Amino acid sequence: MQVAIFGAAGQLGVELVRVFGERGHFVHSFRRSDADITDPAQLEARLAALDIGLVLNAAAYNKVDIAESEPQVAYAVNGLAVRNLAVICRQLDARLVHFSTDYVFDGAAGRPYREEDPVRPISAYGVSKLAGEFYAQAYCDSALVLRTSGVFGPAGRHTAGGNFIESMLRLAAKGGPLRIVNDHFASPTYAPELARVTADLVDLGQSGVFHAGGGEPISWFDYAVKIFRRAGLDPELKPANEREYRTAARRPRFSALENARLSRTGITPFAPLDRQIELYFAARR
Ligand SMILES: NC(=O)c1ccc[n+]([C@@H]2O[C@H](COP(=O)([O-])OP(=O)(O)OC[C@H]3O[C@@H](n4cnc5c(N)ncnc54)[C@H](OP(=O)(O)O)[C@@H]3O)[C@@H](O)[C@H]2O)c1
Figure: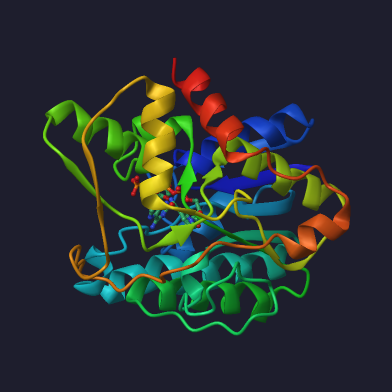
């Protein structure tokens, strides 16, 4: 099958290109410099001549705090551009796979979220990502939407946004105590594993919304402890709470995901977080 992958230079995009290539698909990978997904004419020009059976959209605007001062930009990439892709998929009769976020929830449930839980984003970023989910499904009945959380992949060493592990290592190198929130929980997800799970779901012909978070709810503080233990570093870590650590965007307190539908498919689940961190550091070397 010919597969088009957008956001190919991002943490997840790099891994999707690798995994779908390894599974024998003919992959057309598009970085932002190759195709801006907010521009329908560019998408049309890139895809019209190809016999695309599947479009994977890993492109996204992920600057959660900056989105509060430029919500239109976030919405253009995470919402309206997904409509562009969905419309093209409909024209080409291609399947669409789109990635969304745990930030479509308000985090008030206090337990990992399941697919059927009501959505209530509490930030411009969350609203824009939810719009993307709606657009994907509005135009493509067979769209597959994977909500994930705290993505970290080896490509994050070089991307502008990076990831939590790289941020921690960078801050530790600067010296001084690190203040890290211990009252916010997510389920960090290793990008190569997410790409593998995505390909498994595609192989099974699945559609609709799936949660695909790393599998283990953990506070950002405890996650940092694991990271530094693995890195053999011992910086001074100070637990902070939401009140002490104000950010421009509101974030859900507990946005870990329960991979309820995924576990019913029989697909191999995500490796435990310690193993995912181990694999990250091995790949980083
Ligand atoms: N990272 C996380 O912690 C996290 C958490 C939950 C959900 N997710 C979701 O998971 C998916 C993958 O995230 P990721 O961590 O791999 O993101 P990433 O590393 O930030 O990669 C996103 C890619 O999209 C590209 N992009 C941005 N605007 C574009 C545009 N208009 N046209 C084409 N490409 C564009 C970026 O290019 P530039 O670098 O040039 O901007 C970047 O290469 C996204 O849907 C994201 O929302 C991520």
